[in-house]
Length: 165
Image (cartoon, rainbow, N blue to C red):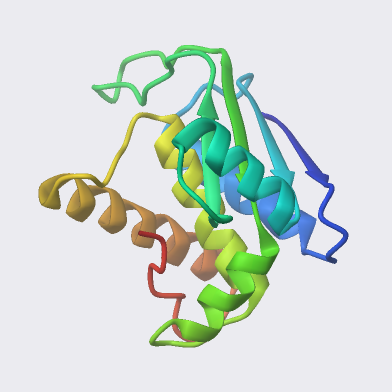
C-alpha cells in the first residue's frame, strides 16, 4: 500500500497513526496492496476554500474525500481486488479538535483524525451516509475498523464516537 501523509496545516498531528489506520482500513476492506492513497492535512482556511469550491457549503469541514479510480472491496472472498489510485483524503485538525471536545466521549484531536481518516477511506470506496440505512452501514463499518485498529495497537479506553455528519 502506498500511502502519503502530507501535513500542510501547521498543526502537529500524529502522522504515523494516520498512516497506520489508513493502511489497516484498506487492508480490512481488502483493497489491493499496491493501491495508492494520499492524505493531506490542511488548516481551516484551506479546508473552507475546498468546502466552498467542491460542496458549495460555507465554513471549514472535518474531512473531504476526492476519489480517483472507482475501486471497491471484492464482493466474494475469492475475488482478486483491483489495484489503482484511490484518491485523496483531506483532514482539518482545527475542526477535529473541536469535534473531539464536543463528542459525548470527549477525545483528542489525534483520535478524531484517526476516525476521520477511516471515514474518508470509506467515502473513497463508495460508502455514503445520506440515507439512514447507508449511515447505519457506514458508521457501523467505521466503528468496527477503528475498534479493530485500536485493539490491534493495544489502545485502551473507549473508541471515539462518530462525530462526522
